[in-house]
Amino acid sequence: MLHRIAEVTVQENECFGAAGDPATPSTPVPSSTESSQDADGSRCPVHKCDGRMKVCASGYDSRSGLESLACTKCEHRGLRSREGVIPLFRGGHEFQFSYGPSTRTVTVVLSSAAVNLWGTHGVNAEQLAKLAAEWTLLCGNTTKAVQLGIPSEEFADLYLYFCRK
Image (cartoon, rainbow, N blue to C red; front, side, top):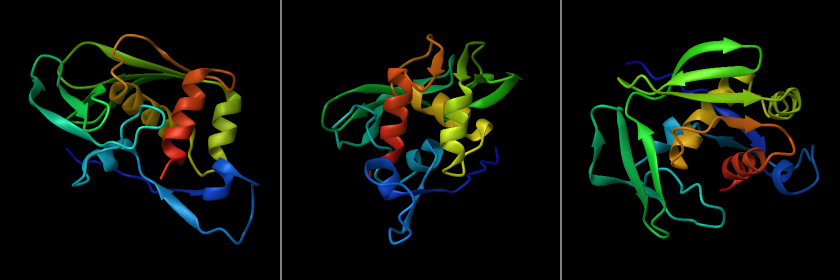
């Protein structure tokens, strides 16, 4: 399977300080598919944890297509699809993704405000939905829809996850 990875740049100060400072260099924000293939593994999605997610010894479920991951520091348990998330349907700002041979899906619902905010970082709605689907699996969620509205806790967690170094 061919993995397409779009590099997204985010001004460091846009996450933590004044927006638009041209003196601050852009930093690429990899998709979780890209970061999960790093030698060190992907970052733990738990706020204020700087651990790395590693594949568990008996961590692949051939029925769901998901690998189990565990954080090296806080022992958070998460999931990752070996094939990556696969877009199935889109209706407006609602996206459905599959993640392997399973018939289960991950639903991502974006608000217009979230699409506009991430758009300032060069991330379109499809890319944002895919990032959110990969992130929610990394958080261990396979059942609950991801609601990315500006006031939602999920939105803040996702945004901070991708702004972290």
